[in-house]
Length: 213
Length: 213
DNA sequence: AATAAGTCGTGACAAATTTCACAAGTAGTA
DNA sequence: TACTACTTGTGAAATTTGTCACGACTTATT
Ligand SMILES: NC(=O)c1ccc[n+]([C@@H]2O[C@H](COP(=O)([O-])OP(=O)(O)OC[C@H]3O[C@@H](n4cnc5c(N)ncnc54)[C@H](O)[C@@H]3O)[C@@H](O)[C@H]2O)c1
Ligand SMILES: NC(=O)c1ccc[n+]([C@@H]2O[C@H](COP(=O)([O-])OP(=O)(O)OC[C@H]3O[C@@H](n4cnc5c(N)ncnc54)[C@H](O)[C@@H]3O)[C@@H](O)[C@H]2O)c1
Image 1: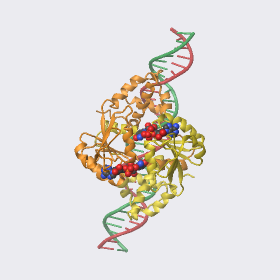
Image 2: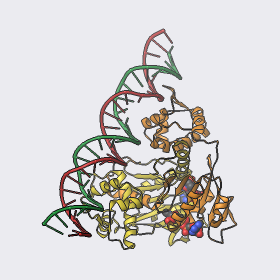
Image 3: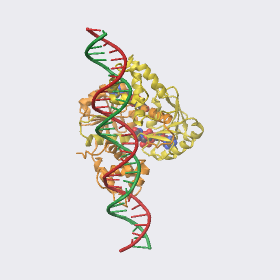
């Protein structure tokens, strides 16, 4: 299933490239150079060429890349045809925002169901996504492979264990808790408070004339 | 102002360490080893020791680190005493969630004001933060150095330019747009759709028995 | 056909980050 | 005091990531 030589850093940029290529196509552009793309996504053009080269020779010298071809290629590579079902746990401030959004734009992911404990929310829908009681987690989550955690940090470990038991393979964790999982499960932490604090740290401690990330 | 040898990767972990040290203190622990801390924050213990070592010899061999001392040290290093004022632009789904949260937990940052265009919101408060019309940006934002962008992507460039003109130095950008700024301004992109997509990509293309990040 | 301009793909290098592994020192105990 | 168990701080090696710079090829133009 995998060309296993692709560096993680590259893999993280693929969805970004994909989105901007989509934008280009909608603008009616048929070709694009690594230089142009570089300006749009703010990634060095040599890095872009290198990233693409892991997948073979996708471009043409002196011409650049054909937008449609590249897009088709990434569509397959990123499994844009296959839908990944996602469950969201914790319909609070953050969870509600995600449900409204539902990562809809040209995506291969869909939040299929949500869970909470609050009686006000259970039985309702947000953005078309039904909200169930967390007690029903085990009976309803079958087949879902990815979970988004937007519950209080104190609940994170308990819920994680239940998710793992039900065979989840990936977790996007927005709680400040660093959860413990078996080694075959992938967790991405998005720690918004840390992001803000580290931005502030960089502003105060790093010279004002360096590159932006 | 800066010990300029601290690697960026280390700097990004500092707020994380700080938070967990705080937790430990609240639990009444007085000492901690890099090994224990490693299990809590899920960062290799050698990496933790290396990170700390950039600031000097903070620990004691055979003992570990004194929680209170370390915490005091990081408090100064992370400027926890000094308050950084933040403005939030775009009080929609995501912006509203942030206002309710306001990054309050033992933090040196505070969202001081918010801006939007919607008449329903202007003049109201969320989580104690006043919401002004975006037209008042220039007259109200004086002194604020950091902005959080939670507006539609199409507005991002325009608003960024206005923020830059008013002397903002750091932007936490949640829009999918890759904004253009002068080189002395720092932008951190948090691209939630990309995060979800890249998690899915890793699940499908990477061997199931590697470490989690 | 010849020339100029543009662009990829990549070898080679450089920089950043992580990890190993151990000497040196500390704490605790008897 | 002597002995054991622990843990730091860090050289050195390994790994990962990013960048430079150029040969080779394409397109466009005259
Ligand atoms: N809102 C933000 O801006 C923000 C920023 C940074 C981090 N976070 C983190 O994200 C998480 C969610 O934040 P929030 O602001 O949405 O909090 P919130 O309190 O608004 O939402 C939490 C939701 O989880 C539900 N819940 C509680 N226990 C549950 C359980 N056992 N099972 C299922 N649902 C349960 C609650 O009913 C509530 O609806 C928290 O861990 C928070 O620290 C939030
Ligand atoms: N909600 C999510 O889960 C989510 C996920 C990923 C990315 N995003 C991105 O975050 C951004 C915000 O998302 P959202 O869901 O909160 O959208 P939203 O539409 O709910 O909120 C946008 C808000 O910005 C305000 N606004 C519009 N133009 C403005 C202007 N010129 N000045 C000031 N305010 C203005 C609108 O009135 C609205 O309140 C978007 O760029 C979106 O793509 C959101």
